[in-house]
Image 1 (tube, rainbow, N blue to C red):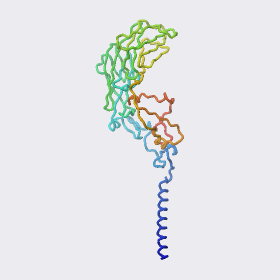
Image 2 (cartoon, rainbow, N blue to C red; image 1 turned 90 degrees about the vertical axis):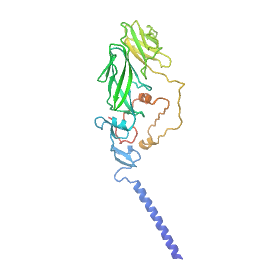
Image 3 (cartoon, rainbow, N blue to C red; image 1 turned 45 degrees about the vertical axis):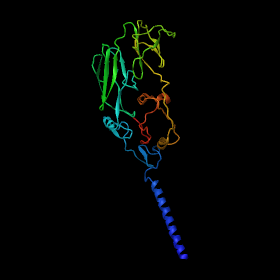
Image 4 (spheres, rainbow, N blue to C red; image 1 turned 135 degrees about the vertical axis):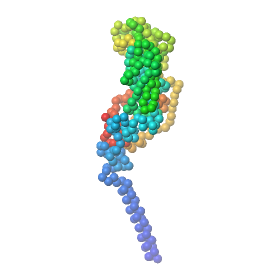
Length: 340
């Protein structure tokens, strides 16, 4: 009787020791990195290393400026060409308008005075809104009567008229509407009002042209035709002047110390209060805390009420000032690395 109980106790004790021994080995193996440092985020690793599965290891991905000609460092830290990226994801191109903005809806309008020039710019982006650097664009005009293009420079000829600009890159094409408004009247003043996002002409603007600094209007501007968006006066200021523009559904703008008598004024449209959007939920800083660590400043920006294309015109510096460039927006790149 006693022998049986003694054997049972030995068996149970052996199982218990085996279970404890195995658990300790597994725990030790799981927490061991060999000669490498243990980590919970990349900032705990040496410069050039990245935290992977709790251990620091050499970063094998690309960094900005490390890729070859015609390639860029993608968000997955792999060198890719623009063509390869667009084959994997849907891409689209956008021509920037007269004031360097991207139209959030439809083709942009480019307005130029006769015999003036503009450096052409376009961007290639995925349909998710990721801008692809290094796209090599070619530009052309449809007729060439009112405009010409060479070496990425658009030139308005002496003849007023309209045309269509086409940009091509990585098998993607996009267009812009061109308008040559001709020459300004001799001895007079001309102001052309445009929507700063779309580049389209804006009608119904009231201008206050102050030539002596007393805050009152001294020159009356008249729209050349109903809905034209072009305003002229037969009298031109003798020196520099101040001008303010007022129109419904746009923010007013004032320019001080203007000397040009042929002026293009971009107006900022106000959002339509009747068109609203909303969503519910909460910001998840989990991935940020995992990769960067606690104690840093956390800032979240959420919006669901503007077109995705308008995000490409967003200036983050307006909120928190200028920021240093980094090549690791997701926090999982090599420790201590920064953009060129």
